[in-house]
Every structure is written in C-alpha cells, then in structure tokens.
Length: 120
Image 1: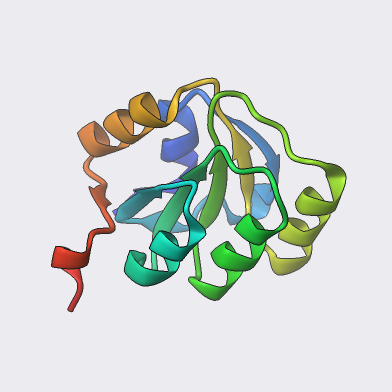
Image 2: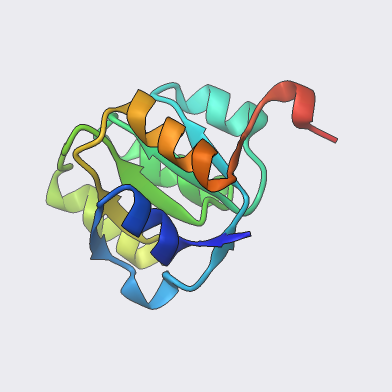
C-alpha cells in the first residue's frame, strides 16, 4: 500500500484540494478518459488519472470510491468540478505528466492497474 502523499511526490503533483486525505493508502491506479471503463473495472483504494475535465469524472470517482482524482498533462478543470470533488471529499491533484508517464511512474512505485482480469 502507498499513501496519496507518496503518489503526489512521485508524480510531482500539486494537491489542489483534499490535503487532509493525503494519508489514505492505495494499491491500484486507473488511467482512463472513458468513465464507463472506470466503473466497469476499478476497485476500492485506487487513484483515478484522467485528462477529462467535466463533472462526470467527479461522479465516477464518487460512485467507484476513488481515493483521489489526478488530472494529467497539467489540465485544470472548471471551478464547478473542483467544488464537486471537494464536497465529496475527493482529493484533487494536478500533474504535468502525460497519462502514459504517470501510469508508468505509479506502476514502478508498486501500484497495479484496474483490469478486468484482476477482478474477483
């Protein structure tokens, strides 16, 4: 298990909101812009990496119990997305890494992906 604080460090990410939740531990990462895939494959204790900026990412993170929402490629969503994440208690981070690089760094850290074959 890895803390969100360590995830932020490895991704050189800026924590935008949810600093109080950065001690939560995670063991998986899900990198996707297709929220239907996240809902189909993600399990608890995971971080959601995406470049998608709409409110649906917060709804998906909430329903799937994501530990944090990480926007890749230094993308910044509108204020309504940030407020929704804050109201749900979901930490939000920004990283300059591409999706590929962010997922690779997290894999090297020991996190595993959320794939269908890993489901129980």
